[in-house]
Amino acid sequence: MKKKADKEKDLQALKDMLAKTPAMFVTGFEKMTVAQDFELRRTIKGAGGNYQVVKNTLAEKASDGTEAARLLSGLKGMTSLAWTTEDPVALAKALTKYAKDHPSLTFRAGMVQGRVIDIAAINELASLPSKEEIYAKLLWLINAPAQRLVTAVNGVGRNLAVVVDQGVKENKFTA
Image 1 (cartoon, rainbow, N blue to C red):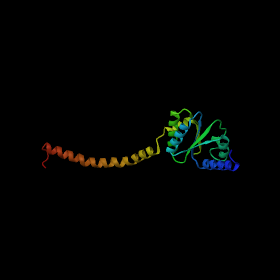
Image 2: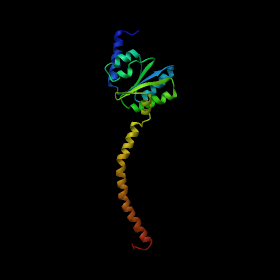
Image 3: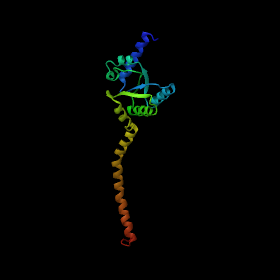
Image 4: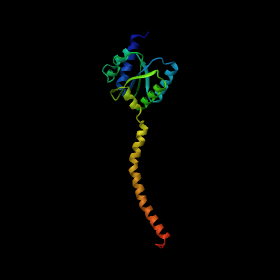
């Protein structure tokens, strides 16, 4: 049994995490084996996230005064939190893929940028492109006008050369 000082330390650590976390997903994990839990933790860590099994009362107490208070009030059953301070899309993709492969993990709700989202919104978030894909598309869009300009400028010279070459071949010009 934990001592009161240890419980207060755990409460403060969870409260600090909730205060600085912009993206979090509340999950349930009924009938999950140890091997599945280990695989889930490795998957979440690979997506840049963290994972913790929490007591419902501890989560509710720690969330008082934070944006996560609405999300963590009235929890029932086995509860775990997956959170990230980096890319919520990557974490949502990883959790959604894992949940499809292992039905023992279920979503309850989530929070992104202070907004509580439901399961449908989590699935929509997971279907978004990753940060890297968005950056690549943005760079392509920025680069495209310059590329078209160079192609057009080169095209004028190329077209002139083709016309002169055709004229020489048809003996209309003497070179």
